[in-house]
Every structure is written in C-alpha cells, then in structure tokens.
Image (cartoon, rainbow, N blue to C red; front, top):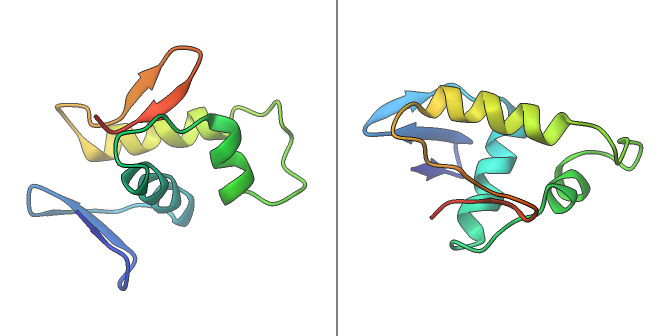
Length: 86
C-alpha cells in the first residue's frame, strides 16, 4: 500500500520505513501496473542528470526495498528487462 499524500508505504498493515528513492521506485513500479520498468527508466526518473548511467544505484535500491518489504518478495526481476510488480 502506498500513501502518496503522506509519502508512506505499508505492507500487511505494517508501516515500512523507506527512503525517498525507495518510495519513488516503489511508486514507479506500482504505477506501471505490472509492466516491466527498466533500470534506466528509474535512473532517469528518480536520480539527477549527473547520475552515472553505469551505476548500480537502482539495483542496490531495489535490494534494500525488497529487504524492507519482507517475504514473500513483491518485486520481480525480469532478466534483461528490468523490474516489475506482478
């Protein structure tokens, strides 16, 4: 569950403490409605124009977000494609 107005995320009624970037990634994945979102798209949308296109910042943010959201995992990695919420 994402509360855009309060900039909060929760799962199963439990508040999930997320950073601004993590919340942005989660929101982008939720808005995509199951479609694959490429790491490059997330980098363009959520990081500034000086972000290194070869950085692993998106992968690290996804990893941290997965850990915070708990099991079963919500974010699916599509090999060679990006990420999605099935």
